[in-house]
Length: 157
Image (cartoon, rainbow, N blue to C red; front, side):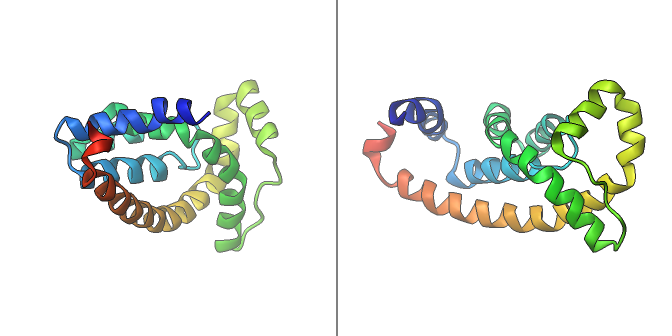
């Protein structure tokens, strides 16, 4: 498992370091990949990550890789975001599970969008607040971690 993690996660980021990308750019890539990857709108994260990468000149493959890695987190946070949005706006939230939401999507994506529109907008407000904080925290942690790797030539070589 340790070899797989090193081969699939650590080595690609070390390769980015070899290409002259700064630790700050990599940290921003990771931070935005995590925060945009948890948007409570299923099917939107790849587009959002691509737009962010193009606009900020980040490594597209890296941000999409981070997005892919945090996909389970997006699913795990979907219901909490919906409930927190309902709580924040003091409305009755949808009493659904993730399995039920996926079933609704399979039955009729348009019906799902219209049925969950308001709840999703409320969830997006909660995500925007928590996502902004998470982006800063992940960025700062990643910068510190990457700079420690940056200073150790044995990791890069």
